[in-house]
Amino acid sequence: MLTVKRRTIFLYLFPMLLMIAVINLTPILYTLYLSFTNNTEFNDSYAFNGVKNYVDLIFSTGSDLYYVLGLTILYVIACVGLFLIIGLLTALALNNPKIKGLAFWRVILLVPWAAPSAITALIWKFLFNENFGPLNQIARIFFGPKFNIPWLSNPFWAFFAVVIVNVWLSYPFFTVVILGALQSIPAELSEAAGVDGANNWQRFMNVTFPLLRPAITPAAILSAITTFQMFNTVFLITAGGPITNADKPGATTFVMVYMYNQVLNGGVANIHYAAIASFAITMFVILGAITFMARSFGTKRNKEALA
Picture 1 (cartoon, rainbow, N blue to C red):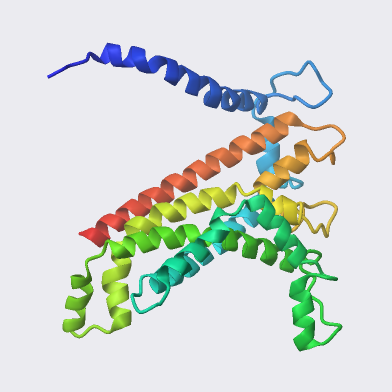
Picture 2 (cartoon, rainbow, N blue to C red; picture 1 turned 90 degrees about the vertical axis):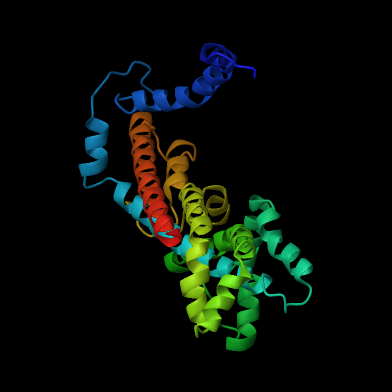
């Protein structure tokens, strides 16, 4: 049997590890360093100022942290909840052998996931147009010619619109994951529960769903992280708007959109890179903590379900 020393393995892996460290860790460490300085767009010489940026971010009454973070968390909860419900329903339908043309429906349901998100976002933006968009045009047939839903100009409807688009883009991922898990569950378990007198709902809740948790949990965590970092879809549809208060970000200004608008959208005369860096590091820590807790909770629940 061929044996290789650990030192030899490390030497072979060292170039790859070094490259990963340079590419991934260098921007993170530099951002962390900037967050402890007073760097702005126009001061070439900047100084270390400790945790002042973090104090201003967390405790200042004019900080956008809590508004943007709360808005983003609400968006994540709404999207992931709908991902799960729609993905579960479509997976159950596709797993039913009585449905005709299953191969066709499986391909059709994957189209939103396979299509480029930027193109999909622009199509939905056209659909949401208040004046000539197909959604309002169809609604006027039933509710009258003056009926109008302010999809992109009203804060509630704009938020609802970007939720719809993200659900359209992402629910097929849950469908594929849950469908694969459903097909791995032995049919004998459900049949045995039926023999014991359990109805369809009881068999699903007590037999099927607990066995789906090990597949649903990582999918939900991954989707939550992806949704938390959502940028291109939201920006192409609303650009973070609509803005109803000049002192607050827009109704769809989520974390990534907020940072983009602060740095690259030209809305700030003197960009405070250090403050943005501290915001980014804070988001990184919060997201890491939420992911760790969700993963730990999911692992515990999965062990209980399989016990």
